[in-house]
Amino acid sequence: NEYGWLGDWPSLKPWIGDRQIKLLEAHSYSLKNEPFESTIGVKATDIEDDNLGVYAGRFKAQGRAAARWPDELVWPALGAGFDAACYDGQSFFDADHPVGDPAEGDVKTVSNMQAGASAPWFLLDTSQALMPVILQMRKKPDFKEMTDPKASERAFMKNQYLYGIDARANVGYSFWQLAFGSKADLSEDNFKDAYQSMTGLENDRGGKLAIKPTLLVVG
Image (cartoon, rainbow, N blue to C red; front, side, top):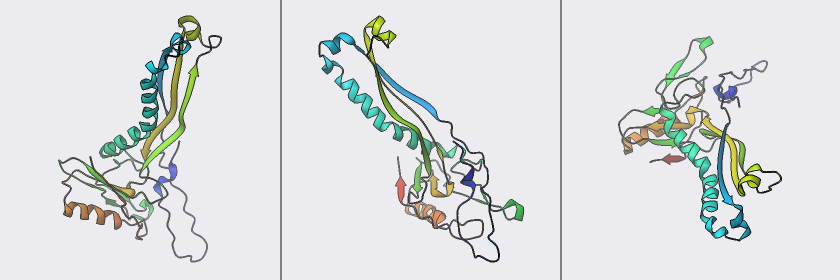
């Protein structure tokens, strides 16, 4: 999936004369949908003899794994944001995000991070149309079974049934302005600095982006 429009934060400006059309920037930020699966085999004789209790725990674990899977994609991606690039080519949490219009020569750099040696913590604005971390769910977990000896070679040759889950998804980053990452101590002063940094963010024309952190994430 391509996210070429991430370079432009939507805002309104005074209407003077004709409408000023601003084309969406193509940053070529893309997320490739990756395949995921979980499969278990069950002896056909256990099904025939109604010995499902032997596998009940494994089936429950498989279901819990499918429910937990999105979290296992999103939260590690947040932690990796100090190194992984977002749409502007910079790390998602970076001290030098370029902001402004290069054609007008008013580009400046903005930070959405604090350096340090402590365990990282994060401030997120989850009230916007997009989440800071994109969960790209191309295909939700789908349960399948192969129990027909006429259709399954494994069921015919090995007398074994297969039960599996497969899905396709990936994670990435939307607007870096919606998140702030810190490796400094989680002190009152550092928290205030991070909070004010986010609420003070402006668009290319100097207008406030109206960002307000709603979530504090700690390890």
